[in-house]
Image (cartoon, rainbow, N blue to C red; front, side, top):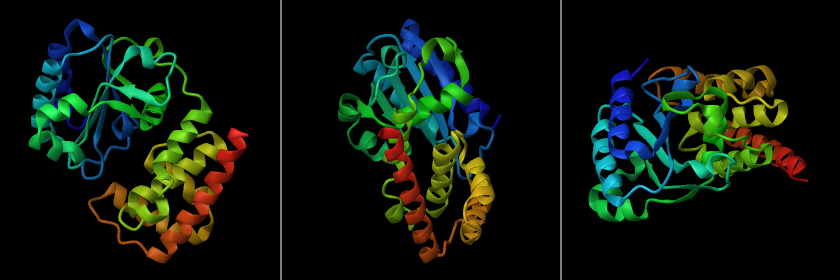
Length: 257
C-alpha cells in the first residue's frame, strides 16, 4: 500500500496518545477504494473514541500529525476524531472532537492552543465519510466497522453530497478536475444508488451522461490518474455544472418529499 509507513506510524501514535479510550482507527477515501494517486489524493483517516480526550492529548496528537503530514502525499492527511456515541446510531450533522487537514495548518502553527481548544463542532461531510467506511473502509486498529458504525440514511447522505457540491458552478473554475468527478459520482448515486470513487464516478459519467460532456470528463479522469493539471474549457465546465446541479437538485427534492 502507498505510504504504509505513514499509516503504520499514525496508528501507533494514535494508540499511544489515546490509550484505552480508543475504539478504533479506520482508513477511508481513495486509498480504501483502490484509486489512490499520490499526486492527487490525500490519506483519509477517522479515529473513534469512547469518551472525551483532553486538550493535552489533542496537542500531543496534533504535534505528531503535523510532522507526519510532511511525509504524506501532496494533498496531505485528512483526519477526524469522533465519539462512538455519534457513530451508531448515526447522528447528523455529526459532532467531532478534533479535525485536521492541510488547509488548517496556518491556524495551528500561528496559535496551537486556540486550535486545540476550538477545532471542534459538527461536520456534514462526515455522513459521506461514514458511508464510504461502511462500504469500503479498512480497520487499521480496533473494533469492526459493523460494531462501530450505523447506517447513514439516504436522505442524510444526499444532504451531505449537496453540501459538498452546491457551489459547483463557482468552484469548477478553480477545481475543474475535483468538481467534475464529484458531480459525476453524485449523479451516479442519485440515479442508481451507486457509491463510487471519483475515478469510478468519472467512468460512470462517460457511460451515462450526455456525450457533449465526455471531453470534459475524460480530461478530468486523465488528470486524476496522472500528474497533469486540468485546464478546462470554462464555458463547457459551467454548462456541465449547471446541468448536473439541476439534476441533483431535482433528485434531492424527490427523496426529501
